[in-house]
Length: 386
Image (cartoon, rainbow, N blue to C red; front, side):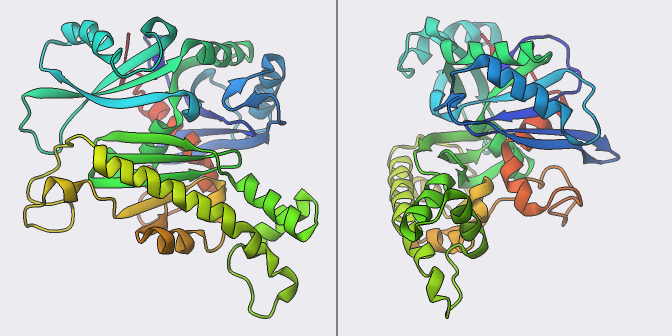
């Protein structure tokens, strides 16, 4: 999202969330990419809270430790592309008259003030021209991305103190969609749910761009806590039971029947909030310039309202591995729900994992892999920094 250097060296990805740090580095190997380095380290509660860094010294130490403990090849480069918290960011697709790039750079901040709920001087603002799938436009569609400067400064500070050179900072939803959307384009809207330990992110991608994002205060950790309270076991044991059984309980296992029962209220609330955002998108989404002949399903003309209908949801994040989660959400939402594939733009088909990192583990690395994809391609200028 934010550029710091004009050069475009190779860079690795570093995903920072409230409770974990993940690192990935890809290497070009022939026509495809190879996972060169990867690693994960926990972040103790309180160091980052709701995306805000509370203890820079502790986080700097964790970044250094994470780099020293990566698996695979040692990371020798200092260039990094890091994530910024979804909860603190603002993204919106707006329309602007067609004009020269230099004029656009000056005009976007003035127009963005009408959409961003903070004074423009207090945010970092970037924008990207969104190409249409079907080009009949007399205007530009512009994706604007903004995040408070007071949120961003500590991230940059910690990275530099850890000896790194931040080439770009990027909002999580941008990285996730880069990892999961094949070739970066979808002829119809797709929803993505990133189900992490501290929160869930709701994302809609259509055409060549993000269209809607929001943070949902429901997490995989809340499921663990619900099991712990219901079964009167500690969080460690509750976490093991959650992973082992999930929502698919053995028919004759009365002892652990309470596992799924404990999680259902939390997951029902998750489904309710997803429904709310789906409804909002489908009733408020602006035109997206999808192909007039189809929405990816048929050759007959599709009404504009039908083009906005979400018929597919992808799950990612470590919490997506919960047994029975996709089936539960599909039943609640009446929409096809499947696990996303974070390797879809990295490995040759039909591979879905590498020997070093299982598919289940890789779902938790989705953001990091998306960051690294940007790094290995050197696309630091994809967004224009103002």
